[in-house]
View 1 (cartoon, rainbow over the protein chains, first blue to last red):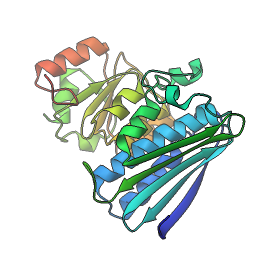
View 2 (view 1 turned 30 degrees about the horizontal axis):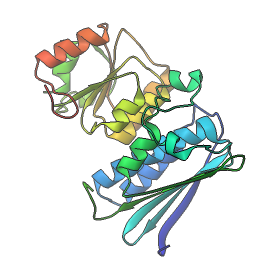
View 3 (view 1 turned 60 degrees about the horizontal axis):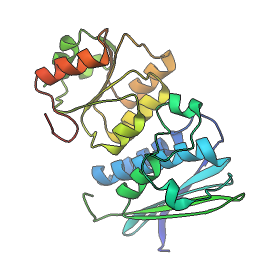
View 4 (view 1 turned 90 degrees about the vertical axis):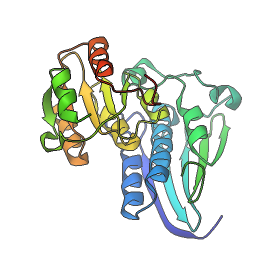
Length: 146
Length: 117
């Protein structure tokens, strides 16, 4: 782990669909204030938001942490939810276990995790059933489509 | 194409962002599925949707959408309009269906998010 120039942690609350996404918008505004590259801001904001919606839907209580290092932005989502029994399946486009409530908000089509993986330069997901899930994504300051 | 031309084409009223109707827009995305917009290259597009919730605005903010058009006369709750104002995203509401809105805008030359006609 590199030295953090900035590190901020935003809480994410279970089933709070009204405020879901606020943490990602705060994080986006933070990057904007730092005059980061717009493409990089967009990619990281999309990943943060998709991840945040996942935590709200599935994850129980969680956090979104943003860390800015010399050469990268790192987003970390972690929750104390039920965990993911089959990670390979969860990463498949179109696979979803979302509730109707979540689908009514325009989510739950099984596109979140694949989209996060596509937009991040590094993507790591670890999960233990009954304990929770962690996602770590890195965005290089000089990178693909950055 | 200017946003006011889009407004005229779909007979829309303006819910927020009256002062931003001269924005230039070349692409459009239409979906009630937020993930479709989040997974596309939505930067600078007009986003047509029948979903009028706070998540529509947050999706627009993180994706860099230039304007949102609610179809079928959908008017979101006031807090959604306030959020769009605070984020600087123009909101329009059209009486047209999704199909007709898209047809009119396509006929005027807008492309899909990936540039396809």
